[in-house]
Image 1 (cartoon, rainbow, N blue to C red):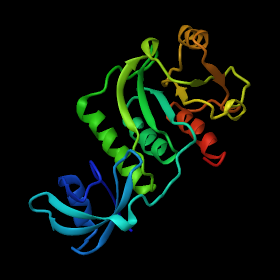
Image 2 (image 1 turned 135 degrees about the vertical axis):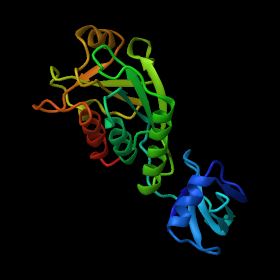
Image 3 (image 1 turned 180 degrees about the horizontal axis):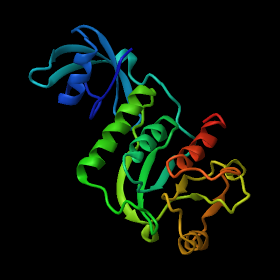
Length: 233
């Protein structure tokens, strides 16, 4: 069954231009069922009442008998990916895969050695759209928020923070207890500075290894999330 994200699950739901275009490309017809999700854990099934691509609008009617159908388990505690700004279009691939791997939110960071120093509003909106599309395709009911960048020194996290660090010998899975929210953090192409790393450790972060090889900045965050996903969550 095709899936579409809605702003809110209600008796009758009106879709905007982007979702309408998606259903039009799929050649859905009035009377067909689709699965709807709100990106916050709510989901159900709805019948397509009308599809008006020329007007950029479609209407769905919720089927109460299918409300709350579960697809795609979430982790016992929310996992946040904190990732430095990366140059080019690397963040798009990170956001897409991080959504598939179960990240509940994605916090962008401004770090000392990052080559990218800012992100425009259009690019940020595109990353959020990529997260929504990845949630739909991977059958998640939660769409991770892609949060505006903050300076690493001002970043405040909840629960446990695990930082990818080549000098560590501690395995990520050895620290995975699910007794608190979890944040996994990776640096930019130039890595975190010594001062940044020391500051994080002083605030209670734990350094973890990603193996004996040096990973690219766009690979490291996904390796961390992949290790978590491989535990079965």
